[in-house]
Length: 192
Image (tube, rainbow, N blue to C red):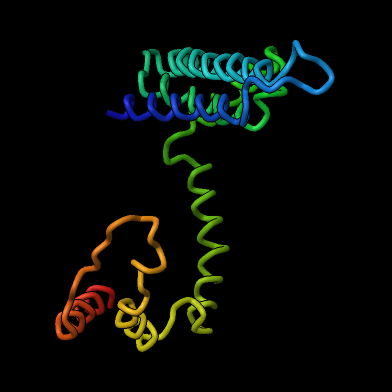
């Protein structure tokens, strides 16, 4: 299942690298024989080179370190390769794509709870926990309970059908006042 997910991720990411050009058939102003199609072709070439290099290097590196093939790392390595090449895929030379893929294999091969991952989690906790604690103490993080309940009760006054006629025939859900109070109480109990 992991491998299918990684293949879908690679397929979509590869399409993103190629689809960054609004109009592929648009020629450059100074010439008629060069255009966005050349940049799209370059993006495809260097993306595939980085994916393949990262996959092969990760697979062989794992084999050298552990002594057997590891399919999971063979599929995680290419994700690191395409992550390494994505930012400059339209301007990177093919030889540099191989270097990016080789470098990107490190992103894929550290996909485990290693020291780097723990360092990232630690850094986020050290920087974000005090920020959210301060926002909570200043009462900036959430609105008051009264404002939240008022926003639930006010939803019927938005006149969705009048303001958004382009969405077609829309019939709002009819809820009595006692039902809405019960729904609000259930939501508030769930939240708090």
